[in-house]
Image (tube, rainbow, N blue to C red; front, side, top):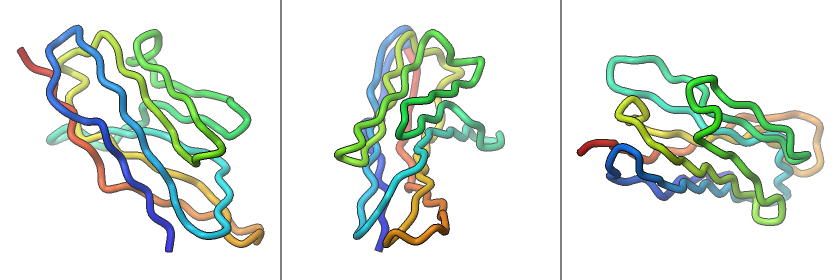
Length: 121
């Protein structure tokens, strides 16, 4: 059984910071890519940032220069450091992981349940 779980969400004032974390767990699990997406009420889910185990990163234009994604390969954990937060950043943030199991070549996509980020004064 594979599990992906986010944590670190909460309430922060505009201009503040939060650090989200997401851990993937399971037997014989090999991560290829992990990422963060977000969904605000009435809007579609959108990409925030992704990172490969090799360290290649990708960011949405709206968060470049403010957010930083990183990965701890030994812990199968991805982090999202969010600085200079804006009200527009408020959303449920979801973590995903693209991974292989048991050394087999097939890749699978797993999603976490999400963590709420609220930006308000």
